[in-house]
Every structure is written in C-alpha cells, then in structure tokens.
Image (cartoon, rainbow, N blue to C red; front, side, top):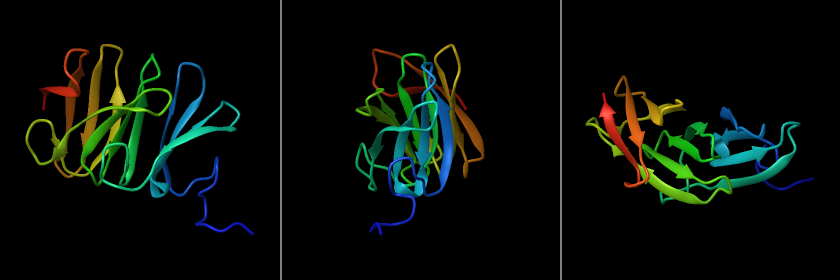
Amino acid sequence: NRIGKPGDGAAEFNYPTHIAVASDGTLWVVDSLNFRVQHLDASGKFLSAFGGIGDSAGAFDKPKGIAVDGQGHLLVVEGRNDRVQAYDSQGQLLFTFGHTGSGAGEFFLPTGIALDGGGKVYVSDGQNRRVEIFKLNAETPGGQPIAR
C-alpha cells in the first residue's frame, strides 16, 4: 500500500488538463490537481516532473494549459495565479508574466495557451472573455501584449 493521494506517483495523474508534444516526440502533461507538469517519453514512460502547490514563481495553483516551442521551452498558464510561467526543457523557471486584472497583460482565470510559428503566444483569458496575444522577445523578460 502506497501512502499519498491518488494519482500522485510518477506517470500518474490527478485531473490532467492539457498535453503538448515536443519536437523530439516527448509529452508534457499538465497534472492540474497535483500542481505539477510531468514529462513522459512517447510510450508514456516517466522522465521528470516539476512544480508544486503555491503562488511563488516555480509553483502552481491550478495549472491549466501548456505549450512547447521548437527549442523545448515550455509555457504554462495558471488558472488561480493568473499568470504564465516559462521554463526550459529541464523544468527550470525562466520568467513569468501576467497578473490578476482585466487590462492588457492581465488575466482572470486563464484556461489555455498556444504558440504559433511566428513567436506569438495566445492566452485564453476565461473570465475576461477574450484571447490575449503576446510577442515574446529575447531583450525583455516576459510577454509584451500586442493585441487584445
């Protein structure tokens, strides 16, 4: 018998919400109620995980969506902390952007995230009933809103 909550082991889940496939064929899965992201190989074998419950940078409260770019950088959107966190392919935090509100660059219960090939980031901002579009750049940490 294992002690712990259901689905908290390696390659186990408690309310997985989103998945992204990296260019190398590995999978990144948002394990929402375990407050983490799990990395699996193409056959579903556990490779690594990062996260934990909290509101500090590098922790999650209801992660909802994930996107991965061609270099393996991950963007994770959080429903409760109203932000996006960026990680490298090793799960090391790079930067965060966004906070609670209804203005440009602010979110209220965001629910998903997507990237396009031109470097734009699309965040579905649930309670604000909109999609915000950002352009990430190397000179400035975080996203710069380019449209609402």
